[in-house]
Length: 388
Ligand SMILES: NC(=O)c1ccc[n+]([C@@H]2O[C@H](COP(=O)([O-])OP(=O)(O)OC[C@H]3O[C@@H](n4cnc5c(N)ncnc54)[C@H](OP(=O)(O)O)[C@@H]3O)[C@@H](O)[C@H]2O)c1
Image 1 (cartoon, protein in one colour):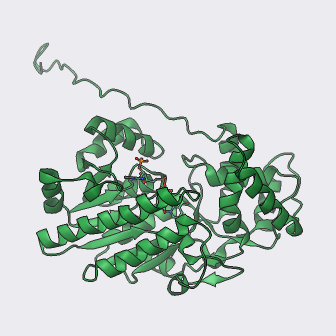
Image 2 (cartoon, rainbow, N blue to C red):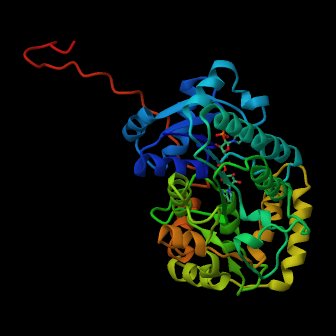
């Protein structure tokens, strides 16, 4: 069986691909924005070196095929013989790729709406070429829930068309789910909605830094403009990757939609602060200042509009993330816990290591280029050069 995967080179995609390679048997056909196989391999290595060494990566390539494609191109840019190769070899689709650019209507329109429509059309081509499609899984987001305030949101109550959205990202991802439901009526479908995915419970390294940077800035700030008892729904990336991979390959998952989140077990800001104060030498407890939430948000919005500078970057960061940090809303995760028989690791158990590592590495992953493949050893069986 072969899974067509988009977004395998990204942060979450790297977790999903690694889990599929390590725990499941399917072949993977990865759609990558690479002009050649070598370029696609290099892009994949950038994502996967968080999880494996070069030798394991080279071994994994045996199970991976690549197709060059772009969400924003007509037909994904996969045409002719290449498209036939894809539609005849694939039996399920796992669509992870998206633009997470919360500020750009244009990027979200092109990558998320037009892109998802292109992936749906490819899935329909597969279904008609092969007489059906085993599963279409769509990686969405809890941002589809729109404006919320102190709620516990279940999967069925997430989408409410009368609510406003925080940003173009949430709005377009909401409509992507709608398109998948409407345009693939006969295909088994799964929707995954991760909450704030941050860090790995097994080690402190990460390749995604925006939210980590915003969190570290808040940890170091002289005051924290939010309520101390606000819950923040952060989930570990290793749990999310495992959930997407394992449920996608299941014969019959129990539900068609899953929140991949910490849900009601989400920690409150004060609980996270207490752990950080205990584990980070010299740190003093945060001063929570909920009355400053609105003035802080206005300041950040203003800074986000400044010409490109450190201040505008910080402003943009908080402009997009503050609503998700302060809205004291959690996404009930009973379904995924039941399906996997496992709960996510609380953020309080790994936040201090992530904080230290991210700051020590200046919010940059120490990427290394893929070392050249070891040349074939010239053996000496029965005398020099016998393998030559
Ligand atoms: N990270 C989170 O906290 C979070 C939370 C909730 C939901 N999600 C969802 O999870 C999914 C993955 O997010 P992520 O955090 O892994 O993002 P990411 O690291 O930015 O990865 C995005 C992936 O999409 C691919 N992509 C983007 N535009 C494309 C295009 N035009 N054509 C082909 N591929 C394109 C990227 O390919 P390149 O390598 O070529 O750039 C990359 O593989 C998204 O659907 C997102 O909505 C993420």
